[in-house]
Image (cartoon, rainbow, N blue to C red):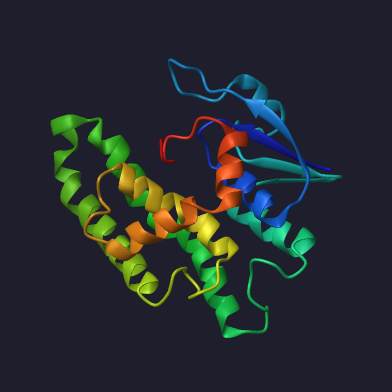
Amino acid sequence: MIIVHHLNNSRSQRILWLLEELSIPYELKRYQRDPKTNLAPPELKAVNALGKSPVIEDGATKLIESGAIIDYLIRRHGDGRLQPEPSSADYDQYVQWLHFAEGSAMLPLLLNLYVGRLGDAGAPLQPRIQSEIANYLGYLDTALSQGDYLLGSEFSAADIQMSFIGEIARAQGKISSYPNVAAWVERFQKRTAYQAALRTGGQYDFAPH
């Protein structure tokens, strides 16, 4: 049985979604953020020294990092589902999206959140942050103009890994200029497995309310 160490309102939500899509049984161990500081509880450090989520345990294997976990679950338990054939050109695009989510697109969105809290002190950084957000969202919007999902008509785990980019952009009011991204978010949030993961995972700031 796969164990998911799930911190509320965290990247582990994507892992729950993937497991629901694959219909893989799992055990959920919950951790709650401090309501005042929004920090993870110290108990999570007993599982991951960084005190971060997601973390999965699969027998003797323990993994952190959502991209690595998604790759592992697809390879070990996916039976060929939710990824292209590894010898295909689509597979290379799939892997690129898995890395693009956290390696490129997430950074300016996080900076927009944190620097925005600085008020006037953060103003000099805003033009570059907004330029980078527009750059990445424009790239994503163009890719999604070719089909319903990142690989065209086929939903894949790349959409799960990239989902936070669209959801955070919408939460920050950045999505109105990118209709293909907006439609993609609406589309994947209607999936049965997404809704099941939402019910299991609990509070999630980027989901529809």
